[in-house]
Image 1 (cartoon, helix red, strand yellow):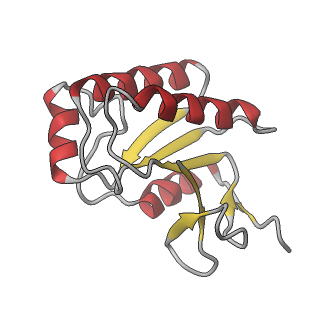
Image 2 (cartoon, rainbow, N blue to C red):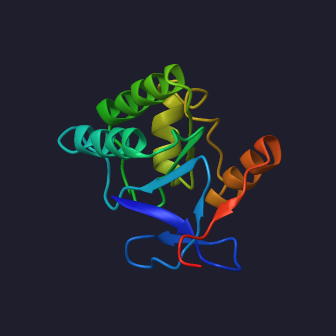
Length: 146
């Protein structure tokens, strides 16, 4: 699972661990699973998100889940993501799924889960979700390497 940061000077996001010059966004946690989400790995993905959210000094108000690398999401995983979104919401963090492939969007919609996951559409990018949050919250970019 990659934790994403903004590539300086762009609207693009990439793996923060591989590119520590990327900018983290205050009060936003952005994750990208690097594989399909299936019954045998979805709990690990969700636990990784929980651990990162809990370990931060400030709990994120927004958790963005970039599903661009997930070719498939099975029924159990879709339900598990919705449960994670409800759990995070109860703790004060909204979860927004973005950049899902068409088959993944279809799976999430078929279970009527998309409202719990931020209203999934094919147009919303990581940058769109972050910028919308920043407009609403007045949040700033953190550059830990300055």
